[in-house]
Image (cartoon, rainbow, N blue to C red; front, side, top):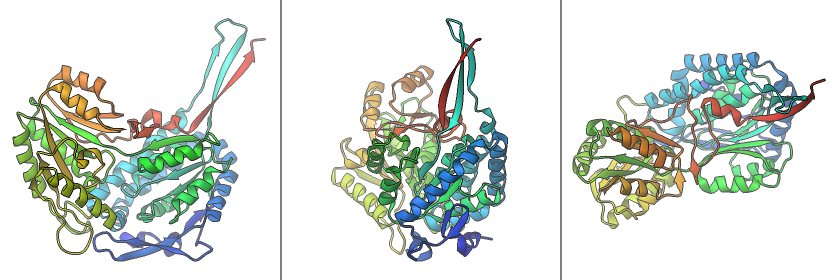
Length: 485
C-alpha cells in the first residue's frame, strides 16, 4: 500500500462510536494536493449535529474506558506504536500527498509522532496518588487521580500526525475519551491514524473523528455542552483566544499551543558551521511551517556577514519540488493563502530596506512553492520580524551586546521556542534564565522531543504536551479525608 491506498474508501468518512459513516447531508470536503492544486480525494463534511453525536459516543464510552486497567490502555498504545512503525512508509507518503512535505521528512514525523504512543504506553501504569498522615495526626490524607473526561482535540495541518498523537496518547493513557477535529486541509493522516488505533484494539467511542469545514461552529457547539470537560487546541493565537473565551462559561480545562515568533541568537563566540547547521533545522523543518520555526535571526555584528553568506549558500542549494519525488528538499506551502502571506512579508521587508541574499520570490509553475530565502539588513521593526512567517524565509538582523540580544529576543508577544548558539557556559545559564520562552534550544536547532514538555508562555498559550508533565493535563485530583480510627 502507498498513499491513498492506505485509506479504504469508507474510512474517508466520520468515525463515531466505532462506526465509519458519511455525513447525512452527503457534503464532502475536497483535499487538495499543494504541489499542483489538483484534488486528491474528498472526505465527509460533518454538521454540528454529527459533532454532538460524536460527543454522545465519547460520553457513553467514558465510564467503561476510565475503569479499563492502565496496563490494557498502555498495551493498546504500544500496539498502535508498532503498527505505525511498520507502516511508516505508507503513512509518510499519504502525509506528503496532502500536506506537501518531502516523504523523508514525513517519515521523520511518523517516527516522532509514534513515540508519543510508546512514551504514554509506559506512563499509563505510573498514574498514582499519595497516602499520608495528617500533620496534626488523627486522620489520613488520600489523593486519587482520575481522568478529566471527554475531550475535544483540534489539530493543525502542518504536523497532521504528531499533533494528534501527542494529544491522543496521554488521553488514552489517562482514561479519557475524545472527539478529534483534524484540519480540513490535511484530514487523511488523522483518519489513517484512527484506523490504526481501531486495529490496535481501541474500543469504539473512545476516539471519534469528525472532519468538517465548519471548525468554528463545531467548537462553539461542543464547548457549550456541559459534558465536554477539556479542549486541547494547536493553531493560531487568534483562534486560541476564541476557544479560551468560549471555555469560560463552563470552566473547561484547556491546553493551548498557539503561535510563535522564535528568535535564533548567534553570538560572536559561536561555532558558525554548527550554527548554520542548526539554523537549517530550526528554519527549514516543514518548509518553515512550524510554530517552533526560527522566525528572527539575531546575529552578532562581528559574525553576521559570514553567517549570512554560509546560510545563504546552504539555503540556495536546496531543491524544490513535489514531496514524493526523489532528491526534493523543500515541498510546497500548504495553500495559496500561505504563499501570498510569505510573499507579502518578503516584499515588505525589501521595501523597508532589506537585501535578498538568495531566493526572494515564488518560482514559476503550478503549486504553492516559495524559494528558500535569506534576507540581511532587515530593520527590527519590519513586519517580517513581528509576524509569524510560516515559510522558508530567514530574516537576519544584528546586535552588539548580550543585553541587546536578550531584550530584542523577548520583544514579542509570543513565547514558545527560542534558540541560541554560544560556547560560553555562563552565558548559556543567563540565557536560560532570561529568555521568556517555554523552550530554549542551546546549540541545537531541534527542541521537540516526546519525553520533554512542549509548550509556551505569553500569547503562545499554556499547558504542556509530552514528558511526564503531558499526562497531568488529562488528570483530576480527588482528596479523600479518612479518620484514623
